[in-house]
Image (cartoon, rainbow, N blue to C red):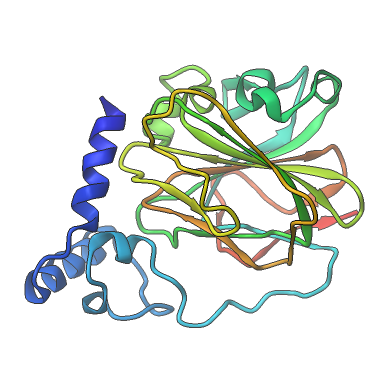
Length: 266
């Protein structure tokens, strides 16, 4: 049912009302969610709610160009971070999820035996919904895994066991300049019409497909800060990296911005 709701919400969000009505809807949305529009066009400039949700920055954010600085890939709130134990991590305190169920074909049996650092970033409806490369990296594969579209708000994470492993998601396996591997997991949620990826239009989310889709890449290099794609409304990004290859500067419930330094690559 959540997938159907999200599909029709996506259609409604993409509908272009006459400009006076659309301007009123946009202003009401911005006011209700208390969105800071200082980096974006005026609400009346967007011809649909979807275009407002997926708004681009008027100018790219500045960031530290030092290759060792690891950036936040998105705006949001750090719900949890830490070190995995026995291929398990926390979505929020007291609620675990398993890497085998989360990653499926994105992690080999040998990789599942290792420990990893993890970060969970929640994007609310007020946040900037585009995501960017946190460092220079080579994208090795993208895996689309169909699933539910539960809300990923904290209240839902606390009542649905291992929610991230149940929801639709796209997993990018990447290699950093230091040769270490990192996984970026983009988790779908209710009212997320789609997830889009600039480097591959074949990745189709919130779709009727009920099977895993795997895409492999050769020589797909993305520069730090480069836009990867966008959520159509809020969701969650999980960052999973080889243990101790990134020293994070985070705490739970910390509000972070895309392009902000959140760690140091070792």
